[in-house]
Image (cartoon, rainbow, N blue to C red; front, top):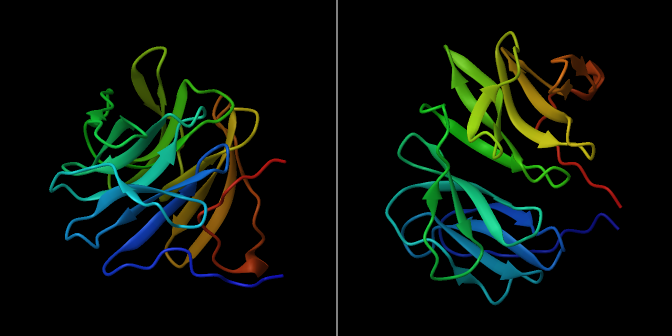
Length: 200
């Protein structure tokens, strides 16, 4: 119907909304209580519960494939943190071989051992993949300027990221094994970014 409905609106920041894999909950970042914190609500934006309680800036919550955990970005760094999707739990830093800027995580629903994220590389940004089986992260993209905002596809091998150049943003299909990058958004669409993949 293309109709918009207000879901959550509190004083301050209202960002990062993300449905759980089963479609029953929404994770989000709100700052109505002073600091940006991770919250979870039902699908109507009600029964909102606060998960994090510390002064660090937080962003980009993403659910684990089984819906029991969340990965998100938090200062300092920023770095990636994981915590149970229940109130009263404590986040733990996702330790990897990358100690600089790590943000915009996407937990692969079809291969739970992988989390893709944006990482600072040189003077720009690239896509990295964390592998739980090795406990290490590897930078996988080699975009000429910036590769940001990764989103996994259903095969657990390909992802779509935003290629950010001077005055252009394009969506790129990327093979994490062969490292082949293929543009998928035509220039006629203008600036394209923040892809999200859905499968019925």
